[in-house]
Amino acid sequence: MVLVACAKKDYSLPDTYTRSANEQTFVYECDGAYRFIVRTADDTAWLFLRRKAIELEKTPSASGVKYTDGNVTFWSKGEEAMLVLKDTTHKNCRNNRRKAVWEHAKLNGVDFRAVGNEPGWTLEISNNVGIVMTTDYGQKHYRFDADSITSEAVLLTTVYKARSADDQIEILLTAKRCTDTMSNETLPVSVSVQLNEKSYDGCGKALH
Image (cartoon, rainbow, N blue to C red; front, top):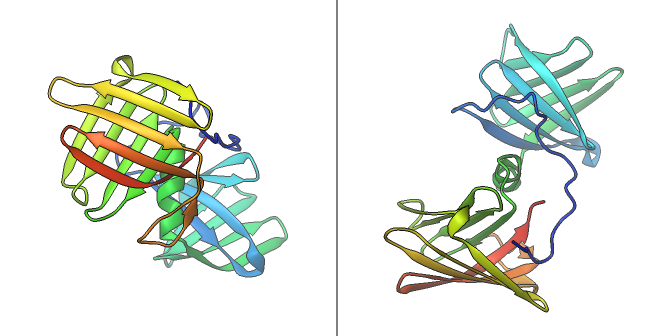
């Protein structure tokens, strides 16, 4: 399959990572324009720093939740956090929920993600897994296996087609800037979806 405007894969979960049902991903923005990503699951937190992943173990804390490996310490309480790297402490870090959604999908192996509104929908394409589309603000889910997907790329456009036992989908990705009407964020790809008898328009971007 071919994705338009593919992004550089700058980090990923290590091979030693074990999937968990209660995974959460956070994007923290701190004083001094410092930014880092954390994924928590059970008693472990994976910290992503400039293409480097560090595994931290949960440790007792008088307040909030604390993870450390003895050299690096991550502490969070609600949407706020603090990160200690050797002699440097990053304070006043707050989770950016909007960005965290995209990073969560990226860490889950999603290669392309798109969103749209009225009613809200999301689209995720994973080359090795398939296509998942969620519509009506998360009320309806449609899945298409990778084996059922065909794709064709012409100039700045990629077309995906797929079928399941009950549904069919056609996705048109065009390398043309698009503004999400909900967040006002500008994304590099315009997306049009024909799902059965309904049409959806939105914006997206490659994650890997």
